[in-house]
Image (tube, rainbow, N blue to C red):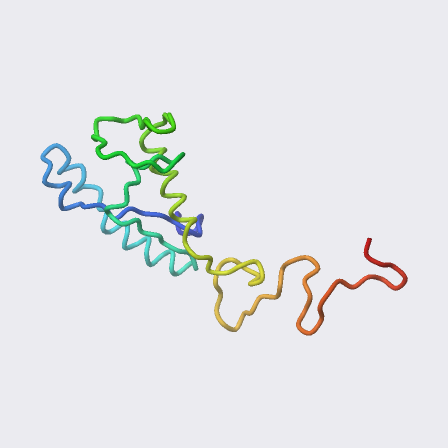
Length: 152
């Protein structure tokens, strides 16, 4: 469903082996199947022409302020509200991390620009036409006006 609905999906590369060493988290983390989820997202987004962006395990999504970009040195798991000392932003820790991951997904290079037609890649035999209104076709430049009219 995620690969069908969204063209770009962002996942974090978590240190699952390290998380299972914590006796309090081990069973809950082991039951989630993070590796299988990421593997399935990878091939299903590829099938549907989407992109899976993986944040490096050292990317500070929770520790980084989504407002000003300041990074905290430490943020314990028990602290559920993120408070930035630099700009004063206060929000839920998970919402802050989600905003940082959204910025990470948007910071990548464009796969196609507006001149490319469709956003999702298609097989090579289906070449889209230009989609911008008033775009000139090959060999024709400028804007055409009906006879007798001129640009204002």
